[in-house]
Amino acid sequence: MKKTYLDIPPAHLEYAMRFGATYDSEDRKYFVVGEVPGELYSYVPKEPRYRDYAVEITKQCTHCGCAMELRERRDGTSVYYMCAGCLRRAPV
Ligand SMILES: [Zn+2]
Image (tube, rainbow, N blue to C red; front, top):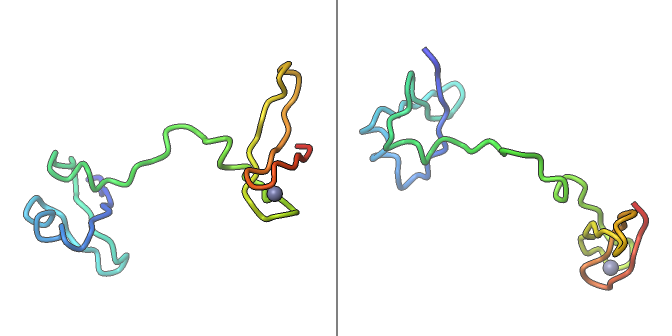
């Protein structure tokens, strides 16, 4: 049987356990065995569906420390980083 780990906020534990959530004292996580009941779907940790390119390559501005955003040049030929704080640019 497949074990599905759940991410349950403490305030929801009683509710979740009523629908079959079990505590794994070794892993210190809650889980259900077999099919996840509909009541517990919202506690299944979400896998990122796609790679978030912009988040993965977050770069910090060397001048002000702000996160830099990846921007595309207006003509679409290349991309560069632009600081959200001081608007300085940096090559990718
Ligand atoms: Zn900056």
